[in-house]
Image (cartoon, rainbow, N blue to C red; front, side, top):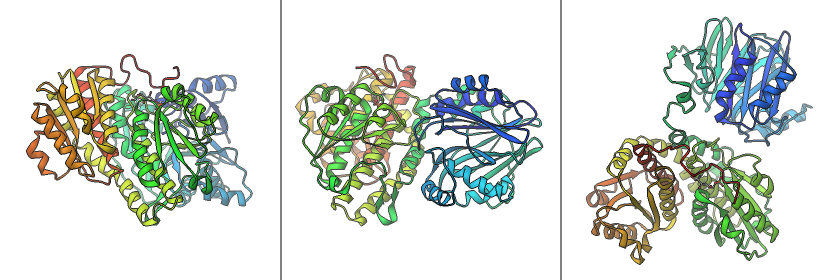
Amino acid sequence: MCGIVGYTGRNSCVEILVDGLRRLEYRGYDSAGVAIQTGDDIVVRKARGKIVRLTDLIAKEPVSGTCGVGHTRWATHGRPSDENAHPHRAGRVAVIHNGIIENHRTLKERMLARGRAFCSETDTEVIAHLLDEYVSAGLTLEEAVRKAVAELRGSYAFLAVTDREPGTLVGARMNCPMVVGLGEGEFFLASDLTAFLSHTRDVLFLDDGEMVVATPAGVRITDFAGKARERSPQRIDWSPAMAEKGGYRHFMLKEIHEQPRAILDTLAGRMRPESGEVFFETLPLSLEQITSLKKVTLVACGTSWHAALVGKFMIEGLARIPVEVDLGSEYRYRDPVVEEGTLCVAISQSGETADTLAGMREAKAKGAISVSICNVVSSTIARESDGVVYTHAGPEIGVASTKAFITQLVALYLMALHLGRERRILTRREISLHLIDLSELPRKIEEFLKREPEVASIARIHKDARDFLYLGRGISYPIALEGALKLKEISYIHAEGYPAGEMKHGPIALIDERMPVLVLCAKGESYEKTLSNLEEAHARGGQVIAVATEGDTILREKVKDVIYIPSCGRYARPILEVVPMQLLAYHMAVLKGTDIDQPRNLAKSVTVE
Ligand code: AGP
């Protein structure tokens, strides 16, 4: 998730663009750049790192103009570097882009065959070359963009300028946000209105499949076929801070609601449900190595460790490889036995967690092949691993991990299917069914999020609880752990996640009428067993909250507070079950008035031991 901004008008645009980028920095902050039309040329200034590096560069090499674009990057394809920073210039055109061009490899091969030279590792640069081909062939920039969008696959919001049309900005949107700010003889285009809210509150929102052409004379919106689209301006009354959170009170809530998008982006270009195919381009494993794998060791900390526990069920169940799950802080000092044929998978949102990094280094030093699952491109763990699978959750600002966790589960599910396929454990048909289940998750989560008020009302009932017990069996047990961790992290209520089957061996002693007990009891392989555990907790007076599958009337009869989630397959279930956990913790914390995005004593990335 990058930040894009464009301006055309009568004012000098450099400061306007840079100020816009500062306000968009929460979307991505590993490199930034601008492209400014100056007379009959385009001048690009871009640099790796925070916006300040860009402003230093512009101070050293000033540039001015009244039309231009700016970008702040969250790397997905190509590590953070000056070359990979946007804007990307190709001949007469410069482009900035937010999103993922899924067919960038095919397009790039075609252009390379036509003798074009690429300067970056990004997917975006293909757009610049595509547009330059058409503009150089005499098309207007608008016509060029219209031809290009017919060839692009994936998600994008991009803006383009050309040295041939001073003052003209052209943009296109598909699955990524774009909004137009309306001024007097000046217009702003951006990925969200945070970028220009200090200049205007009158905006037009673009829909998927739409283009915008802006000049100081005005703005036109059309569909991709060129048909005009009328749009009435909306007046925005948000504060810039609210805009950064997209109108949500906290980044955490915004990130919970971004999960459908995060899953779509993480699945993008990696699967073909109809043919039962999974594509994992960055796994450093030959077929021979995959078939001779003896063990998979998953190493992680905190919430990522909970993802690893779910990953064990997925990889053992779908690829039939023994899996060991270890906490980084323990594994690094345990002198673990690492046999030949061991794959170590380090899971980390930030890619900088010291204990996970040390754990992976330990396994590598003992001969394991290392793969990392990371959300931050080119982070240390990603760079040091032999191969990396990036989760495309976008920047996660809230300290309590939500969307990154869900995309880790999606990446582990895809990895298990890939290993299962390569080891001839799974048929294409079986994989196809799993991929269909996965691809339905964004819609199901979107559906479930509409039930947020129900979860908020359950939070109100338990807001004064001093302790909280979370129970789950099998693949839901790690989600019970995650639910408890979320509550601890942001509401400071003592909470414990426990395997439901273990309850009789101790924690049942904790249960009385003051103890809320959340039981993950969705339909599946351990439903009956979990139901009896729920009844045991109920019988001791526990305030039971059940998470159940839609249509399950049995639980409605037994328990007053039931949170219903859509039905789905076994390995997709934890991905759905965690959403009510996140919302419950969030609403409990809102009632407690804690600092939800930056809870006390915690850091987003623990880079020390
Ligand atoms: C989760 O909400 C916490 N922020 C924390 O437990 C986190 O998961 C842990 O520090 C690991 O971080 P990583 O995924 O960036 O390695």
